[in-house]
Length: 348
Image 1 (spheres, rainbow, N blue to C red):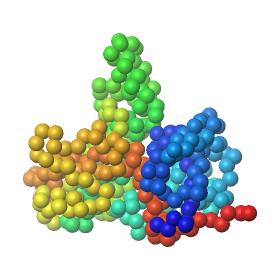
Image 2: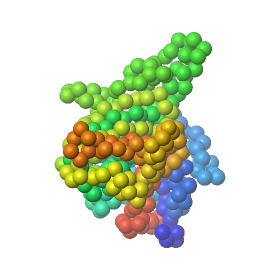
Image 3: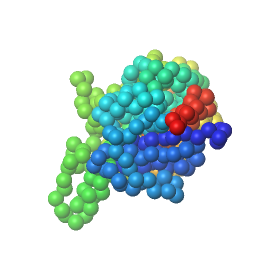
Image 4: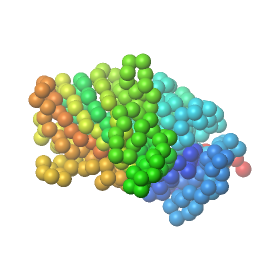
C-alpha cells in the first residue's frame, strides 16, 4: 500500500469490547491513518482509550463533524447504527458497520475479505458496508474454499459462543457470577437469560416464530448472502462460560465427493485459516488458545459416513478479532487494495 495515502478514521463505540479491539488492530496492522478519532456516547465522554503508544480521549458522537473523515468503523450496536450510519454516510464518510442493522439490506455489501471481496464494488449505493455476525465470519472463512472444491449443499452448525460476544457486560457477569459461586454470595442474572457461570444457555438473541433464535437465523441468512443462496443451513447457537473465542461444531454435505485429506490440503492453503488437527489428546484448538489471534483455526476434520459426501470439523476463532474488529479493518484494507477509496481533500 502506498503510505503517501493516509486516512482519517473515526471509531464509534471506542470504549466497548470491539471498539478497543479495533483500535488495537488498526495500530498492529499499521493501517495508514493520518488521524484516529475515538467517539462514544455522552456517558463515556473523555474516557481514555489506547491506540498504539498514544492515548486518545473519547469525543461525543452527536457533536462530531464527519465531513473530512474518510472511514468510520461503527461498533455501537444496531440502534445507534440505524440512526447514525446513514447520517455519517451522507457526509461522504464510508461506514463499516459491525451491527446487524444493515446486513440484510440488498444495497449494502456484507463482506468477509477472504470470501467475497468482489461484492465491495457496489458500496457507494449507501456508503455503508456491513460486517457479518461473529459466528458467521469464522464459519464462511472455513466453508468458502471447501465450497469451491466440492459444492456445499447443506450445513448443520452448533456454536459454543463466548460471553464477550454480549459485550463488556457479558464478561463482567460471567466473572461476578463465578466469584459469587466460590464465596457463596447470591448470584445475580442481568445480561443473560439464565445463570452463565458453570452453565450453558441455548439462547442467543430473541426467539422467532419458528422456534429458532435471531442469532441462528442471522447465521443462515448471512451465510447465504456471503457464500451462496443455494446452501441449506441450520444452526443451534449456545452461550458458554468462556470469556473470548467462539467455537463451532460444523457438519457439511457436498455435491461432489471430498476426502478428509483433500479438505485438509485445501484448508491448509486457504487465507485466514490455520489447520491444527493431530488425532491425539490435545491435538486441536480450544477458544482459550484462539484469544488474541487473527486466524480461524480448524481441527477434528473427519468424514461423516451417515450421509453421502459428508465432512465434520471443529472451528474456533477470536470473536472480537476475526468475528468483528479484524474483519472490519480488513474491509478497510480491501477498499484501499481495490482502489475504491482515496483520502478526501481536507477543507482549508
